[in-house]
Structures are given as structure tokens and as C-alpha cells.
Length: 438
Image (cartoon, rainbow, N blue to C red; front, side, top):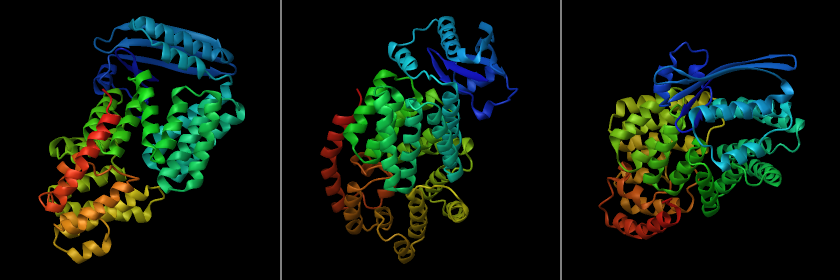
């Protein structure tokens, strides 16, 4: 097991890329941009557990601290506190009161409940979020439910169930899943209303329901409490992506990448931000990193195909779009309706770029980007206005996006489009006033 710290105290739990790796610790630390690595092992025998741990300075390989522990399994949570304190002392850092308070509140009372919660969290973050398969989702649900069976008052397990059902709603738009997500978030809130995991569960509910003031207030509190938490920054950049604030999206996705440089999703989000402001060089850099981290991800392939259309490499774009179309026919993923729509939209833009107007419009008759590509501003602008009212799966076409996105370049000088820009400028200014964190 290796846990890597970036000063003052940010950590990355064991990542599959480094599992059983013989790679030099200093090289791993450099790849992760961290200064210290905690390396160790855990061995369980009956009701006894042996833990070995050593904290290593990744710059010169020197040992900052090392210790072996033999304990009864029932004392494992006390041991966690002891090891955490030793690490903080060795790094000579102060851990904030909010973090200590949260750690104390979320401490489980039941070892079996804790074990199943960790399994649910691992499957959710390391398998389901990458695969979006029914199998991985069901596995994570199973472990979270087993955790609750062992401890009916364990708020983290309820928050995990809420998050999983919220994501299922996000992928299917099935309101029954949203009801379940709300139910479990409420149960978590009854037990531990103020801890980060409960706030995240509540954030997802408001976010999915497009209740932006409520979701922003929640994520701002989480950021204020712990600005060095990866997921807090990840959720904030997702929020900015949704409300059409690409510069803020780039800022907080960059922060999230600093905290966890191995999460492919965040590179994809930042790539979208760069595309939305017309920054081609930084966009393709992040798309390539995204693909290198998760080469089978349909989201990464979608972004690359969109980039190929942007630079008019239609031959290669056609191949990628065809591959995505075939994968949609064969896959068993719980894919976003937005993903399916995006694939169809890319094919329609491909036809439009070839001058095949009829084929493009038959395939995607209500896509503003298709009409924009065809230079049909009169038809595109009303559809853009309609999308402003119901942007569930992607960014709002905000003023900044309308001003810079390459997919509106053929109609940007049209009087109708200029009028739309003038309408959106004060709305964008108000969004920034409300939601930009100073």
C-alpha cells in the first residue's frame, strides 16, 4: 500500500496504476507531484492485525518515520488515529479543526460496516465511474447495503447509496432513482447533517434538479471547510461546467488535477473548458492525457472526435465516430442520454462539414450546433434560446461560450446571433456575481 502526500497534507490512496508496482518511489512521487509517500502493509490473522508503515521523503528517499503495530482488530480505529497523528507530527503540519472534527464524527462503530463501506467506495470511484456498467453499479450498491445491515446509524453508507442512486438518475433520468437518492441523503442528514459526505449527497440532489443556488451554497461550504480536498474541487468545477462559466471550470479543474493527477474525468472537464473558450492547444493536450489514462472511455473518445471535427480532419473523425456508434450498439453501459445524443450530434456535424445538409438535419433536426455549422443563424438562434431553458447534461451556452466556442464561428457575425450575445451578457455577469468564489 502506498499513500502519497503533497505538502502540507493532501493524499492519494493506492491507485491501480501503482498496485504491486516495483517503480521507484521517487519516480511515483514525481508523477503524482507529491513530496512524501507512506508505504506499508496490513496483515490480518484471526482477530489480530499487523501493520507496518514508513513515511518517506520522496525528494531524497530518506525515512521520516517508521513503525510496526500489532493490535487486536477491535482497536483498528484507535490505531488509525495514532498513525494519522504520527504522520502529521513527522510532516510538521497542522491539521485543521474541521478535518479533525469530521474524522471523529465519521469514525465507524462497527468494523464490518466500515469494511463494506470501503468496498462500496472503491467500486464506485475506481470501477463504476470509469465503466458506467450495470454490474459495477450493482456491486457498489450491494456493498453499501451490507454496510448498513451491520450499522443502521452509519451515515457514510447512506451517503454512498444516495450518491450511487443520484448517478443512476443522472444516467437514466429515471425519477425513481432520484427519489431513492433523496431518501438516503435525508437518512444521512438525520445522523450527521454537517459532515462533508452528507453535504455531497445533498449537493447531487440539488445539482440534478437544477437548483443551482442550493447546490452552490453546499459546495462553497465544502470548499471553505476543506479547499485541499480533491472531490470538493471536482464538484465545484462540475458546477461551473453546468452553469456555463468556463474560466472558473478551468481554474478548479486545474486545482483538482493538482490534488489528483490520475483522475481522467477532470482532464476531460478541463479540456471541455478550453474548447468552450477556443483554446485549441490546451484542449487537445488534456484530451490526449484523458485518453492515455482511460483509453476505452467513450467520453474521452467523444472529445477527441469533436477536436478532429474542430480542425477539419474529417477522415479521422469519421473513424472515431464510427467506433463510438458501434460501441453504443454493443455496450452494456448505463450511458448518459447526453452521450448518445452527443454521438449523433457529432455525426450530424460531420455531414454538415461535408455539405450534406439534408442528411445532417434528418439525423439531428433540433441541434443548434448543426444549423450553426451550416451557417443558418435564423434557425440556430431560437434553438440556442431553447437549450438555455433545459440544459440538463451539458454546459449552458452562456455568453462566454457563445462568444468563443468554435462551433458557432459560422454564425457569430450574423445580426440574430449578435443580438443573442447582447441579451446574454448581463445574464452572464449576474451568474459570475452570484457564483464566482473570490
